[in-house]
Image (cartoon, rainbow, N blue to C red; front, side, top):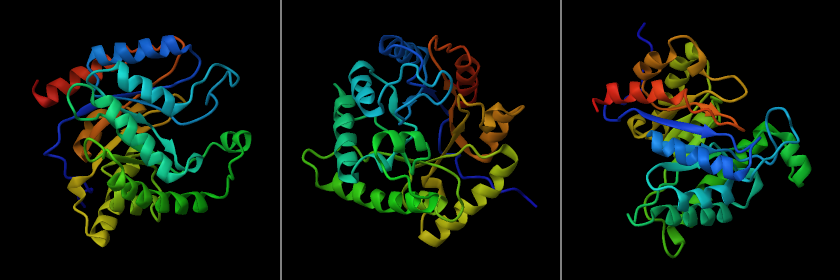
Length: 278
């Protein structure tokens, strides 16, 4: 039986990086972002947490959206966004307004913004407990995210000024019953850390949801990589070529502070340029 592959022949391969906003000063973080842009990455992501995700847990850490606003002004070319925004932490209409504002800041002289609105339902209970948000259940957080996405799109249509472009929505997760349905309904990009051997099945489920929702799956870009906590299919042997064959076109490794060693990006960028015929 032929394993499901995602339609992606019309898309170039892109290399992003998630720079963890932890374990370093803001100056070091900003320097890493600028070095990554100079190196040639296509997109730079942070994350939306309030504390480090790895030891030492009491180390330096910075909030996602204020950092993104600064980076939107400081960078010139790369797309940028949270990987991913936690929808539980902010009113959805406020999220839409924040995203629209960063979109405009990032447009600079071109007139076209560079924000990718990466979002998800949240999972880090210490964030919820320390900042006074209701943690709920996996199911309740996913249901809330589904409601929020509709409100965010609606608010973008009513803001003045409007976003500079149709802001792409990236949804992170791999749940088959709720998350992949939301991807089919709302996402421009699906980001997943599913094991490589399980990817064909997940792609098949996504295509089933697209059929039910009347969505052309070719409209959705597939994204994956690995985290600083040591999971993600890109860490598996010879993963990159197979991910490409399955239809993944946005590859995002994660790099931590305080040093932000960007050397893992070089072979990926060289691979991208070979694939794209640069």
